[in-house]
Image (cartoon, rainbow, N blue to C red; front, side, top):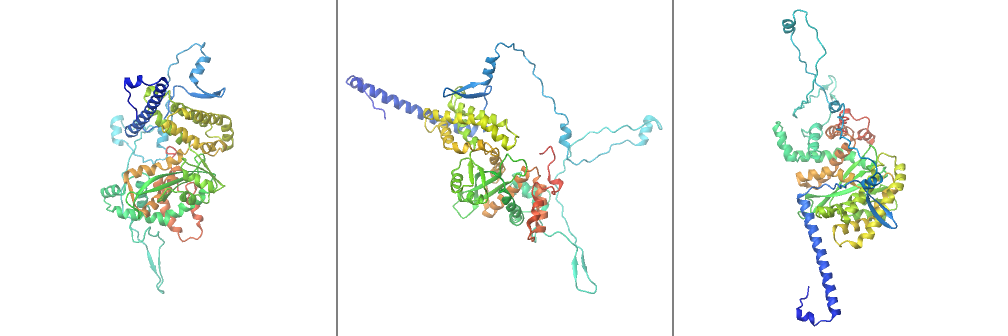
Length: 537
């Protein structure tokens, strides 16, 4: 509270007291101004979250670089530096060239699609009337193409199984035939694949599928579809899910993330949060990607501890403490951090500022430094892991070390609890984890791939809001895993679902699980229709 002084009282005070009062009130004003700036930043951030764009793209005029000069981090604009070096060169305006249109694009678009040839001809009588008898010859066809869309249709597949009996014995045999997917149910692999593809790939809730099927004359309830889906996931797809889980342990780098989900009937009070965890193989690996979801009621360390029990290597995460807890318990597990999360608070801080002040802020400079690190890392894309590691040591590590030196130097200069201060604190606390990628060429800089792998679930969640039962949540985790793994390996989820639901039931009684190798997303024995065309990949 600021004390009030009258002119008479001030005149009665000695010089030293007045100076102390002035300094105290100056400090109070500084604190008030700092608190005001924090409130304005929070208001601007809330406004941006509600009405603004969600992109974190950071643009600079030219490329900003930084270096250490006499112990101080110095920033400069590369465009300005180059201009200064070539100031004597004559400037010649170069006309802007339009990018050349890519040749063969249409052919690439049509590649892989079935072609139906439609003939258009003239009758011989009509030709003779025009040219006279024998006065014409046929030239090469003029060909043009159009896309044709055939709407979905529903048919009843009626199987007639021939039954035979011996004339001299009572033996009865039936012709070989596929068994029912679910006993006593009309569901087929093609229909269940359509339900799964619609919900778990295209985010169409079951009630909307129920309406759409009815338009085609198929009257099935959402309850039936839910029961089919849960049973097929538990009986058939779970077998492949477990096989993929075991295969995941053979990789050196994994990535992990988690997102909340509401489950209606989980034995807890309404509104209690559950979580869908996602684990995937490192994004640096070419091909043979595995993406697995796991439903759990909580977000505690016991879940990654159990899921990663058979894994030895590096797991990239967003800095959530439970992963670090598991790391401390094991010598064969290392956690790597996410630079995308490190930059996020700076991005929020910059967007909360008036445009005129953005480029003068420390948050903007921090973003610029991280952008420079990403720019160097981008140059290493496609290199073998060993070479990438060596190049990181030479070109990326100096930038990373300069960034940490700069934020530690500037931490005392920013208001506490501000977004910039939070960004500095996050990076400092995560420094050890953010540097892991420098020493291993298989480790990515960020955890964006895991976030992208869980995006399909988040989009679907907006449409169906909550999952009804724990069984439904576990089934959803299995089906999302198969769908996302299929997409990551260039497969068409619908055709892959149908193939799995056709083949797995044939082998459930097999003691040897070798048949699963032929069903993996990268198996050369998969039917050709499961794979996307070159354009779709």
